[in-house]
Amino acid sequence: QVQLVESGGGLVQAGGSLRLSCAASGRPFNLFAMGWFRQAPGKEREFVAAISWSGSDTDYADSVKGRFTISRDNTRNTVFLQMNTLKSQDTVVYYCAMDRLAFGRGGRIQTDYISWGQGTQVTVST
Image 1 (cartoon, one colour):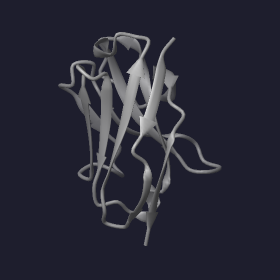
Image 2 (cartoon, rainbow, N blue to C red):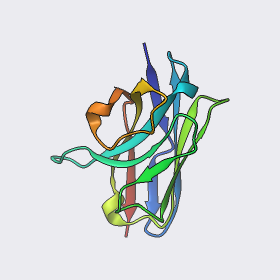
Image 3 (cartoon, rainbow, N blue to C red):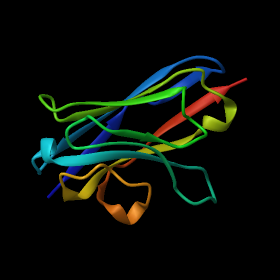
């Protein structure tokens, strides 16, 4: 059974930075693309970023492109989301997810993913 544990959320001032981490276990991490999504209260979960199984391909939502960077360390079974120039609208819960199929690039749709973490809250103050 796959387990994903996010960490690194917290309170930061607008313009600041945070680095989220997601540690995976229960599946060969290096074979699966990983994604980050986020969800505000009462809203649909939305795509943030994805990274392919090899780490060679990344994809970003337009709202975070140029500010956020997704990366992975397959030796540590961990995916990261470096968030810079944070804005108040980035205040939501962030979730990591593991791709359903091996050797993928990581999609933008929730159903592309088979496992989800418990989420980590990011709050940006103005």
